[in-house]
Length: 522
Image 1: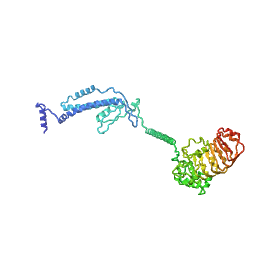
Image 2: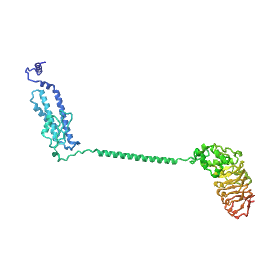
Image 3: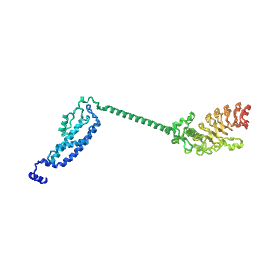
Image 4: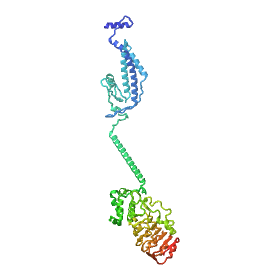
């Protein structure tokens, strides 16, 4: 379409007045952009309000910027806050300045440019009136924004015009003389070294606290474990399952340990492979694997009973049930059910063992599995009493009468200090009665009736103040006199010395034994 045709059509739309008014191409461009300009005008008004609010906020809130040198900042309240009347005055001025434009498009374009210049000039004037705020304008060549602090007297009209004409954000230097009199906050350099040092110290303290807490916790746990271990009860030996002794050796050293339990006399006897002691030693070695289960006293007890068995012909005993059986405790080996044939003798001798061992014990052993009573009367024992018998130091009663046992009474009898009853009646014992018998201070019943003892009766026997029955009759070669010390036996109830070789007079102190009933001296 030609220029002339476009002018003709436009004139027709204007009302068809027939008169053509002059125009150029810019009028058409402006007309087409009218809608865009109106939208931009509305956005500009919003932008003006936002800029005014930004200036207010920056003027009331101080901002500290770290850098190579101090930057003065001023925080002042804004009194000339933008308002509605100011915008209306700008609008009137814009209309008056652009009212002479003949075309609507040109008029709108003039208003838009006037508003742009007025908005920029107003923001810069507000910023210059508020030291400490920032004048910000987008740069035409750079994409970043530059914040420019405004000093009290540092900004001039030439600075402002530069910003308006070029559209650039210009950083204006601050006049030190102008702001030196102001009391402004100073930015301080940040020193990272003390902070890092403090953090290191804090980590060290935390580590030390954790280490101390862990150490205390470990000590508490150890103390608890030690307390629990101390409260655990130790195992004790019983007749059914004897407990091991802490000193019991391991099987590999058992032979040497066994030998260490015996005295020199037993050591010498072990040199003879046919001796009762050697046979007993070999028998114990048969149970070597179970040896750690027994205490030292139990090992000695096994050895003593085995030695008695081999020394007195145990294979020929009238009753040897369970003897030398490794699977049966010694507490269940055969023993006579009655001490010193009490039932039979009491019929011939009234008052015999009256009140002694009543009620009778239910077991020959104590709770540790050690023998307290050994009764083998009238059981066809032949030979002699071995020295190892006196290893049974827990014995309270020993009765082996009415057998074919010879030999002498060993001085080791003094080791049986727990004895309360001792019967070795109607045996073939010879020799003298050892003085160690006076060490049996708990002895209440003592009978050596019908033996072949000889020599003087030791005076220590009169120191056994707990004696109730003393029977030494039918020992034709046993001699001596009755000392005045016999009066110390105040509990004595029966005294038999008939068919012996005692001489002298009967001391009057014997009358102090008020319970004495039987006085047989001849």
